[in-house]
Structures are given as C-alpha cells and as structure tokens.
Length: 79
Image (cartoon, rainbow, N blue to C red; front, side, top):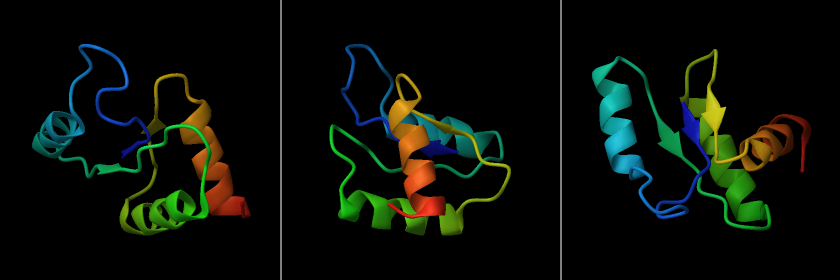
C-alpha cells in the first residue's frame, strides 16, 4: 500500500502511522510518499524506493487519486 497523502491534509484524517499499523496488522506492507503540490525529483526518487520495496499488486491512494496516480506514472514511466 502506498500512501501519497501528507499527514494533516484534512481535519480528522488518521495519521499515516495509524494507517500503517492497521495495514501491518492485516498483513499488508505500507509506505508513505507524501505529496503536497508539485511532484519533485526528490519525491519521485522516494517513490521509486518505496515501489521497489512494496509487493504487488499495489494499492496507491491519496485524497483524490491524482497525486498517487501521477506518482505511479512518474516512477514507472519516467518523470
């Protein structure tokens, strides 16, 4: 599972730490590559490292799906 949401993006959202804990309790591996605004080279590199370490199939998410989708495309097809 790849979380592209930064903590505190919306009031009341759970922290990534709590999401990761619940995911791991369910047997899933989780990583966070938070994106706020522009998709930078540093974020893409962090995304590459996370994707290299996560099993497939992969569930990636953010608030709307745009950041997570853009990150996956940048990592797998080049930024």
